[in-house]
Length: 200
Image 1: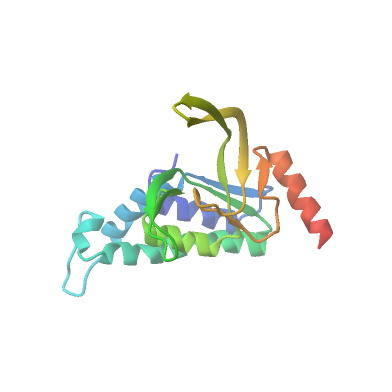
Image 2: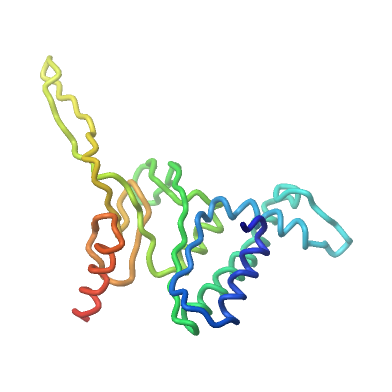
């Protein structure tokens, strides 16, 4: 069991330097890894005047979160080395949270976003090929509420889908031209990816 950020980096290094038959690396989850990364930064950081810190907020003025980006880049570098030189895929799982999105073109609204510090979330989203949002398929049911009012309610179908394109309610993207919605199964995703590749 990995209990530190260094454990994760070491595991990636072993995959890179050793012979094995593994084809995919899965990190589950990024938001649980983030506190370990922050602690790792505190453990290794020594300031120009010998400063040491116990927590990410102790750096002041958001400096700790900026420094933490270098550790995220180390992680991404290791993953991309496995992909580019060992032919491995990687999947990064993260939970979501609802945050207010300050849109420059419309009124602000709530949406699901990756449950990471904003700087880390932005870096990872920019770096990877796909950001996929998993959710239950919901249908909207309307009913008369009296006094010429219509009530609406969302009803879950119980079916889970991957969403591959951004919507006002969530963050998503893909660089493969995937369908906007894919049933949440490895087979469905693999089929969509293979079909798209054959069309290009």
